[in-house]
Amino acid sequence: MLARKYRPTTFEALVGQEALVRTLTNAIALGRIAQAYMLTGVRGVGKTTTARLIARALNCIGPNGDGGPTTQPCGVCPHCTAIAEDRHVDVLEMDAASRTGVGDIRELIEGVRYRPTSARYKVYIIDEVHMLSTQAFNALLKTLEEPPEHVKFIFATTEIRKVPVTVLSRCQRFDLRRVEVSELAAHFGRIAEKEGAVAEPGALALIARAADGSVRDGLSLLDQAIAHADRDGAISTVREAQVRDMLGLADRALIFDLFDSLMKGDVVSALDTLGAQYRSGADPAVVIQDLLEVTHWVTRVKVSPASADDPAVAEAERTRGKAMAEGLSMSVLTRAWQMLLKALGEVRTAPSPLQAAEMALVRLAYAADLPSPADLISQIKAAPPAPRSPTSSPPMGGGGGGSVMAQATLNTSPAPSSAPQAYLDPQTQALPGPRSFEEVVALFREKREAVMVTHLMEHVHLVDFKPGRIEFRPSAKAPPELASRLSRMLTEWTGARWVATISNADGQPTLGERSKADVLSRPLVKAVLMAFPGAVVGPPRPAAEAASTLDDDARPEEEDL
Image 1 (spheres, rainbow, N blue to C red):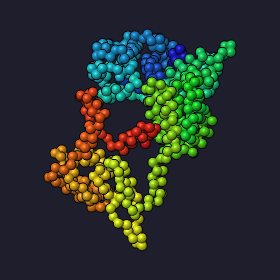
Image 2 (tube, rainbow, N blue to C red; image 1 turned 180 degrees about the vertical axis):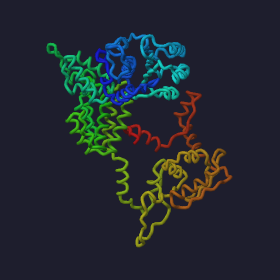
Image 3 (cartoon, rainbow, N blue to C red; image 1 turned 90 degrees about the vertical axis):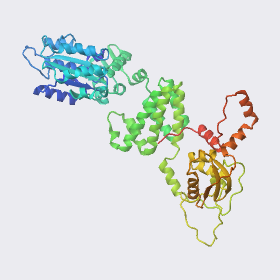
Image 4 (cartoon, rainbow, N blue to C red; image 1 turned 90 degrees about the horizontal axis):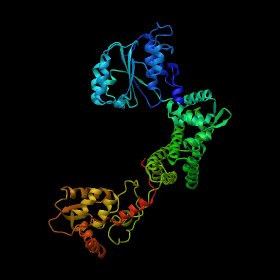
């Protein structure tokens, strides 16, 4: 395996960890050696390798046997070779993932008091230290705070947040960073050359991108790619297309074509491109991930044009990315990011990932034609105010489920044509006044006052209604301020004075009671209740609300911005 064959044997050979190497080199040279080190980072960036290098640096005695701690381990002395072969009796490695209990730590602590057998320091390397139990961490605290001079602890973890603060405060912490794609590609190119293989730059870039900052993962992929490559005698040629097929990736150029089709609202072209990618072996989830990467990169170019000069990006992608960034607004890009992010979760959990991806692309292409919220506000402000009709609308038929704005007008006489009319902003114009109690409820429903609608439907026994005056008997569960709130809100919305008063008369049944009685009187409902004796009839929904729900179900889902 390439990851083991090319494991770094010196600090300088560590890839992409210059800050760590500089700090450790200076500390060892100055004799400022900590009693415990905490190495953290993602998988495969060199935590365990660094721990072994520190152990070698502290115990190296040089080729002649009289050397001290050094930043350049010789690699030939007995201690260096024994540590490299993982057989040194004074360098103990422990996997905390399999030995998590307090008993394992007590066994370790008992050996701390004994001096090393042959080495300068007894070094304890505990990998995945975050897996230790709370009791194990507590047992380690005192020894970790004041260990003997001949003992050094080196911890490695990928989950630094799970390590107690009391342990972190006793360690010198080093964060090993993810390795950049360009560094990984160059490193993999050198190793491929040593292995007698020729790798195309595009193939190395794909492997480096798939490694996600991990050297070990990238070397495993490179090893697989060399085995998958074409052979011409003793030379293997790692081609970009072969690596793409091996990783199940989509063609990068086709991803840009797909993104371009989505931003133009071309659903047919987008679905054809996705189908072609799927037939060539690309995973739908990977296609969505690639679209997310393109969206993120185009957004970065939009915010910072200098990002387009990234040498790790192909020239063709940079050219197309610049053009897309110039033609797309920030609101469109952020909306696409949110929709794709949601689509990724849907594709991963859907029974048919391809169908989920297709529906997500249809939704995204549909949203490409929609104006942004800022554009909508600008259009509303730029539109002229709607003319006010001098005549009232025809009488309403049925029961109050329609739009109040379209079916009811304010009961006032029109102003003379010779008098100048004051201009009112469309958002502040008074609404026409309701002409029935059903229209009052419809007005509150249109204003999205759900709590008041419930009170008016269930707790109001209407005694008398006239435009501007409502008399009712509240039920026992009605809030005490119902009448005052009703008067205030109607006056505010209609621009006319409304008065709601409470009466002791019985009044009519509530709208909810009347609706329920109407439902119970229907033959079909009676038949259902007879067939299911335990069934309960809930409050019916207004026709307008039911129709709105059907429209929402039929309409493609819109994203939250």
